[in-house]
Image (cartoon, rainbow, N blue to C red; front, side, top):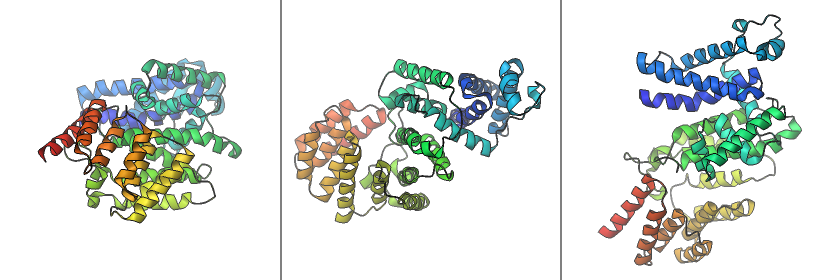
Length: 411
């Protein structure tokens, strides 16, 4: 990783950790102060490292500077005397004596507590997800707007209102009672699922795969799995899904950064260790009687780790998509179900089902139909590919579609 990539990478991985610890120390009502301290720390890093070069341990440098800035804030604010000093049972108001704990254990505990504070029922669901992406995952307003398919002003207002709710509702950074965890967990899992999807199916930047986002989503989900109070079947199913998908990272992109479709992937590049972990977490998820969308998607991803085409494989995937659409309908799931139908039954049957969806403004819809019409109607293949090219959002997607058109014209 070169110097220009390091600071954005560290911002993605460390921003949320330091912010969570400072919010736990100051109180979540000081969330914007914590954010300002961490943002100033990264600004100073960009200036200092640009002039003097990288420190021996960049992460430790960030932690030291953030601690010092936090202590400076505490020295001059009543928050130390009125809150922090009381909680650490100190009578003197000297922030220099306070140890700001940025150990792995405290970071993990603080982030776990932050997840549930943000997903408090007093905060609207959309704002919970946006704020979690912002505070816990380091997403900017532009990225969140893209994930929600809305504009920046809307997201900015949601984040502002959510932070105000944290203050006015006097929400504490703590794990909820056991009786409340399941109801609060749903929004947390939705956030982590969105984060992983943004990395795996990225459309906000000209890269098809953003590993950092996927790794961050897996790290946060693993925190839930490793805590006895939050390691539910749903959480294990989500982590299983992430492991199965991420096992195909290296096979999914070629050296030019182009997407390699599933059928053309080199399965020798699949990560067997991650596939084994996917099996492990899916097995853990099988406890109990509840079947969530994460269970079904994990099972679908499991079948995709079997490269050989068999009727059993595609029939199983088709039935899983049928159940998934009953649990939670989505256009993408419907498209994927139609592809599975073509593999399990026939292309002609799948074309009838696909055209019923009528997702004419979705480039993936046209890519699917182009695939289904291959060997049946060449004119329709070109028509759908040209429409997909016109509707594609990123340069990478457009390049991939243009390549398909060129290959077909050559033949």
